[in-house]
Length: 205
Image (cartoon, rainbow, N blue to C red; front, side, top):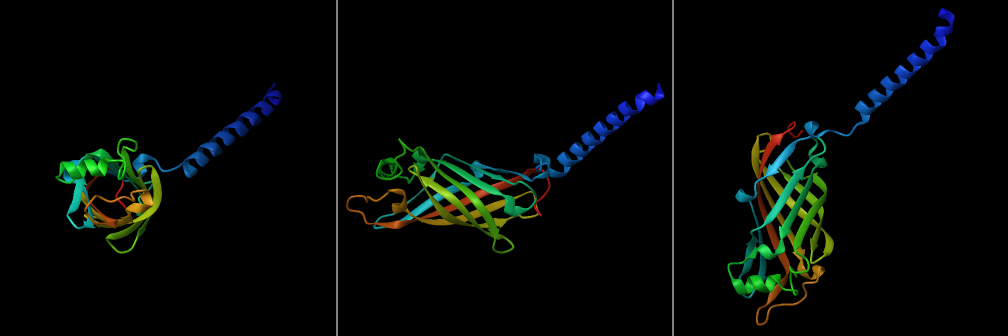
């Protein structure tokens, strides 16, 4: 009787070994969980996104409605992804006439393309507190690669600020027309001021 049970025991032992190996493999090669990656929040109430265009009269303003997120896959800061989503119709220049012009089909075409978005594809440090961010900017449904430069304060603490700058050519996004009797440059300067807070996970390396 005992001899008849040995093959069964061998089979059971082999099955257990396979399960253990599979479990170890899953642990070793599983992607980092949210608990293993830094978690940050950006507070829109204390942040702002502004723009400026050189012209014969002042054309500058901000966006009142937008959302931004900064996510990391691990404590390595180069694994971060910055995403910004702006409500194009929320443009505010302080002038109703300018706002309506920028919302029109000649510029943002907010009725057909309600959002302006930016999503980073690469974050590269250029100094202790500075970064160069390559990403895709979408305006009017047109997407082009653009470069954003960032300066970050508060590294190593629980909160801080991100100051960013970008220059893009409006004509690359189909905004080819001007405003009657007003000379407008092609290049648009964008400035970001984002307040961030570390709310979970390990600190950045």
